[in-house]
Amino acid sequence: MINKLKFGVSTFLSGLKDFEKFFEQAKKFPINYLEFKTDPPNFFPPDLKNKDIQEIKEKLKSRKLKSSVHSPIYDINIGSLNQKIRDASVESILESLEFARKIDAGVLVIHGGNLPGDFPITFIPEAREMLISSLQKLLGKAKEYKIVLGLENSPRGRNHQLVKQKEEHLSIIEKVDSSNLKVVLDTGHANVYGLPLEDYLKSVSKYLCEIHLHNNDGKKDTHQSLPKGAIDILNLLDLVKELELSAPIILEMDSVEDFKESFDFLMREKILLRK
Image (cartoon, rainbow, N blue to C red):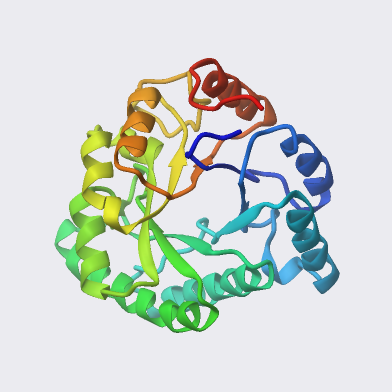
């Protein structure tokens, strides 16, 4: 049995053609959730046929798994100062929201966008206003579909990220002020900024809808397995239990081998208990 903490895995680069194999391998893991990434060539909504979606839904039901969907992040920027880019980004995320509705997913994860690195940081407030405007547009459908939008903190990159630390995260959530907009805390993303994870977790705990869990060396967002990296995973999970958080913990790694190594670690450390 899984002891209180609820775990899931992300489909990483497992597209529809590899889903059968991935799903069979995922059956070996003690999970409650499966998160679908929707960047092409993964589960890109415009490429999915109704029969594909129905098969996905039936597989989830057969395993009694809940689901969440991660909207596209590549070439997407809902905080763009360019309205055409921003509108196209919102439209793409709405397609993922529709996919989420069709498979009965409870959460759609979204990134908060960025300001190009060549722009002066004085433009960041304006970009955040564009982000808030985009979120408000997305929330119309999210409320109709009874799906939570999970705003995730972004990884370090060349561009100026609009949601990278707790103050920015909380400010946007509180300004929008909707029960359908909550927080996704990505541990690896926060770690490459050198942020104290326990403090971040405590600060956003009342808005939390999901945790993305992976490890890294604090320099690059490498999505390593749980025992490999600088993050004190055990201490962080102890705090999750201490705070009595119910948000699912989604392992985000790049291979089935990394998932296996991570679950073996959780079993060995008695975070998960065998049946």
